[in-house]
Length: 379
Ligand code: GLA
Image 1 (cartoon, rainbow, N blue to C red):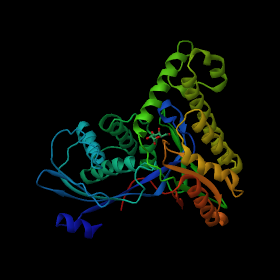
Image 2 (cartoon, rainbow, N blue to C red; image 1 turned 135 degrees about the horizontal axis):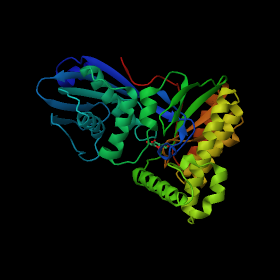
Image 3 (tube, rainbow, N blue to C red; image 1 turned 90 degrees about the horizontal axis):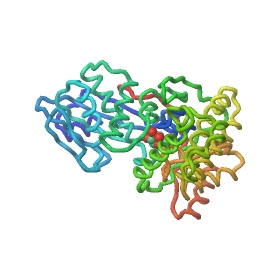
Image 4 (cartoon, rainbow, N blue to C red; image 1 turned 180 degrees about the horizontal axis):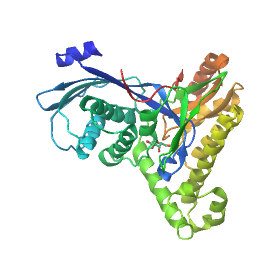
């Protein structure tokens, strides 16, 4: 990064930072419903080389994209189109809103996460930017607060009603650990992700996530609408405050088949996370895998955020003996799936999945064995 930084800014970078991406093991589309989720940080992510400047400018460059930006330092910013630099700009805007003071910065980013593939490249760059600024200017702000501000960037600056999961996972991740996060209270614990003879495969469907943001916001609204109807008789702050037995007794209040399906997914997914925690702690990997399959089925049938590509991956996994569980991960509408595959069979699994997918979808997926890594850090 130093050489690239020098070529572009004609000076040396003084500091280097890294923030990972994440996968979510289970607990999908429930973070914005007050549920519990189980993400972990991965070894792929975003790098930043940075140096302060004295000319009161914010300069953004990235090795992955040709677009660059140079802006005068001011007290607030607004989103300017769809370019990548809106994410770090939004992060800076959010810090300025909290009355943190910064000077000019020259910033060079580089990411090795597949962009827009549901591995949280946006949370990664947001948290990376805020963490770097915290370190450079000695701000008193915790990683949890950084995660919360990152969520604000998405909600207010970018315009997606996403929950806290992604920013929290990339800010707080720990090597070889899954995070069990209560998205209502932000209480969390680390669960050792010990999968013995298995490997966690990440399979990028390579499907473009068209209209993902608007469909995501639609799901968010539908959950709010279902909750409002249930609240006419139940006392609940979030959909995840309701258990499935109570839901069955009161679902007639919803009186809309689509909203009922959405709520049923949320409530049962939240219960699956609790079961998945027990399975992981008791080393019952087969049970964990079954819960992954059940999660996918629910996301496909009830929440309707999967799609042909992700379903093709999971269908293949079900036929493959040495794969004990698989599901889409992240928002869906394309993006990635994860699978638990026996280590010895990983190469064979990959080869067979590629041709199965190619035959049915017409292009190839990308498959890699994931490493569960640390959250954001200085290098
Ligand atoms: C996206 C959002 C998260 C979460 C997932 C679905 O990744 O950013 O907040 O809602 O989708 O679980």
